[in-house]
Length: 549
Image 1 (cartoon, one colour):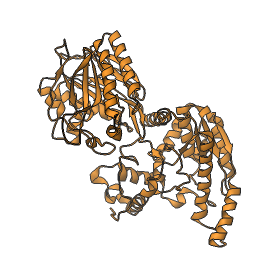
Image 2: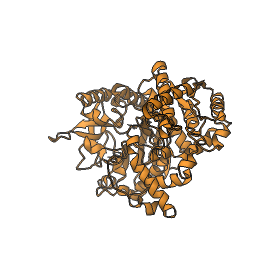
Image 3: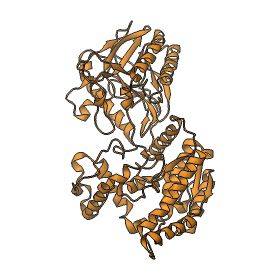
């Protein structure tokens, strides 16, 4: 069976645009003599549509686009994901369905059974689950196809009592089609292939997986569609992080011919960089924002890496750096920011914040009385002056501010509200400090982009004389080891004892600060998700609570 896999980059809510992409892919599939075009889960709405599904007319307009697509199925059958009204009378009136278009009409459909309702997923809010599962057979074909949408193929790994793939195979399916919208985190592509390989081998049935690609709000989708034979071996694949189309011969009987395909695998740092670049690009592009960014350049590692990623996503002519030296800035901070600008080919402006800082000190004297040092108050006002300058540039020049704080700092609240947290997108908000350094090393693989002094010098906010992060925080390697288990670890291993037995006091303090600074993270920009558990919709903790673990 010749199956055309279409791995698009859909935009949520662009119903007509998404439909046209599928129609163009169908025309290509027909030209190449494909027996079937397979497109991802909810491809017409884009994933995740969230509460747009409840907006009056949204599903109706999507159905209209689905009907327009029926004509394309005269040339080749199409299997794609769509939101379909059910016949139920309860409040959940929709199915997340795999729809089969054939012979110029809607031929049949199969709803999704397993509706994820954890982390970033909220499908039970909108959809009703299938209660039965059965294969479908296309007109003029004898091949029984099992339609298992995304999570339906993950059942054994996630502890569900229903296994849709096993049921479909038992009912006669000789090929499983798995249209998906599977969000990415570092390592997810290899995890998917390994899991689905086990499913194919366990059921002695080939599986064809197709995934969307692109950034939608905080979520990034990596594509990486593939074909597995009945022994779980990969016989064909599409690349990561780019739209793609290809046709594969999928045997449904007998041994598969293994072609040793290039799977487009990336090492973890390259994968992290590619995902962030795609997330930045699509955040601008899909909102039709002017593709112009502004970044405060401190001469430090975080702002340098953010600028590098922005250049990769938007181009150097679209990125503006602003160096804003203050009373405690070192001379090398501005020098390193200027060197970074030259290396990346971006414009860098300088704004001396000392006059504004001195004006604030005068106000503080009136408010608080004369003091030699106003402590945290005068430290934070420097950050807020810089944030205001960046927002002024944003307003005047129509540039989106990219926040530069990393996950280690956001976790501990080592950031200033309305200061270094201002912006429209937190590029590194799900990237630990250790991985920021790894990204800087990758940026310099083919020549120095990020100045070596920026990489080698001790991190510092430079808001007070002689200030270094290491004076206020434990070493980042310890912080990151504690946080990565406390935030992303298995449910049974989140306690202090399991996190860091040899650093129990430090672990308790890190987790205490993690909990106490939830209020800051609620007010930070959207964080691009790169891990299993990012700050955002997938991590929902109360600001006000007294539980300590």
